[in-house]
Image 1 (cartoon, one colour):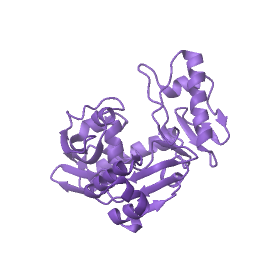
Image 2 (cartoon, one colour):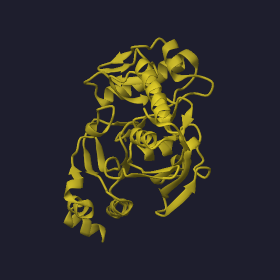
Image 3 (tube, helix red, strand yellow):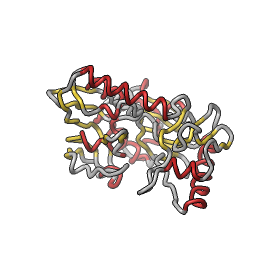
Length: 309
């Protein structure tokens, strides 16, 4: 298919033929697909049901010269108010199947970590308790080596199936994923996680559930879960804690419009209800500048940005 054919036929119609009309939206507001609850329209939002369909959508975008991006649950994403002039490939919901074989749990990229942790618990498998409160998907978690309360993806991932930047489907061992603090082989080299296999340990479902409930209680006490946010807004600088640096700079409760540094946990930027993406971005940048002025440390966002070019 040539570019001219795509232009003549229409990108929307081609995407609908590839994945089904019910899985393609034009002008879909990204605020409906991010935990910040902000973001303008995507030119197209597509929810492929398989790796094969995903590859076809990417090939079509490349052939048409239309930009694309991969989004999971949108839990670590700030989309601009003007949106994204390209194709958002939304892996959450459709590519979210999970299955267990022995002590191994395999999950597709769009599966929520909380669902994976709950499934493991029901089946008496321990190891994913730390992930039971992380709102992201398996794919996003592998890209950023998500972690909490002493656990990380690198501790439990034994294998990952990846669509490489060159277009090949490859399997990497956990060691080959090169996990580090908020980084991985995929974050460095590009590519798309298709599924992951977790090596878990047999355990008592009741004790596993108790540990998950304990961690949930800690989150409720310490994190502003009552507000829309993207979790921890900034990466942890080596030797410091971002929240402490922000608090020491006098920014607890600092606010621009309805965007605010959480009074409960200074490491979180929250949407109090009607914030715009522009207000959240302005607040993030203001926090960076004020913390740098106070401590000489430049905070790096953990949040990813889309549509700001």
